[in-house]
Length: 336
Ligand code: NAD
Ligand code: WQD
Image (cartoon, rainbow, N blue to C red; front, side, top):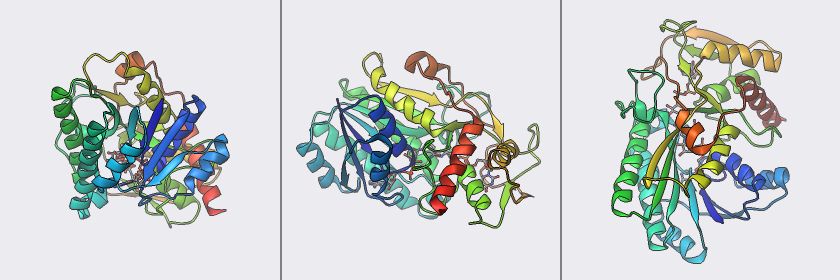
């Protein structure tokens, strides 16, 4: 089976390539424009697995370049990670967000259709649920109010793919809605935060601990949660990656040709609990302050992951401690 991973040099893409190699997928291709990653990540994947990836520097905004890729290479399935993932950046530069996340998707699907490539896994996000009324959220929970262009771009991506599947019955799409991926590969060679401007909690904690930032601010301690800080469903990136391998099997048995599946652990963890776990794993005190709420933050969200368990035969195996300890190992390696 020949698989194309878009955004394969990025955080989740690189971990997924490793899991695909572990499951002995032979012909793996990756395209990336290295906007938020480095080409040398493929060398790190080779260092971990002993296997080379066929990789190409292609921008998904360049329709002709993608078409040319599909004309020259035989691909069975595509796992589509390439996108801009920063929520604050999407508010500052919405057009770039839509060009990459929506325009890039349109170019990809058009090129796949022309080359008769009919299986696509799409990286969606729990942000499509907005601020949910009922918890945990399952796949029937309706889209909420998008809190950012980023969240809207993922809602649009899902809508486009669903519409496309309605009229192209031989085309199969699985939208995987990730909750809060965190952690790194146990080797410490790959992880999150190449850009040095991460926005997500765990890399910010690790950067603070290593001295790249003065302190971490906890955004809000007056929420109606057990310790007043927000609750999220943090999921280890390796568990997320493994779900993609399982999703490739699901193509063979899925009934509707468009389907959505939550990828979360089913458990909520507060910001302060993440900090405590990090302090335990790193053996050092984190410099943090209790601050005001961040605009647009949801108080609590976590997944009902029963569909992933039933349909993908997948479950999250790794813990919060695994997430923070591997993130810490990766951050220390980066600074070494
Ligand atoms: P990432 O930024 O580490 O990886 C994305 C990769 O895509 C990068 O290597 C980047 O260079 C590449 N890329 C971006 N635009 C491109 C373009 N136009 N052409 C070619 N390559 C391009 O992000 P990630 O954390 O690995 O996220 C992967 C996917 O999962 C994204 O679609 C993201 O929206 C989604 N997602 C991520 C999270 C998260 O918290 N990490 C949560 C939910 C969903
Ligand atoms: C987690 C918690 C913050 C930074 C975003 C996207 C979502 C998905 C995951 C892509 C929140 C708190 C954070 C800090 C803090 N990504 N925090 N101090 O906002 O849940 O979700 O990433 O699809 O779509 O919206 O993730 O990591 O930014 O925040 O207290 O310096 O950590 O308030 O409660 P979020 P996050």
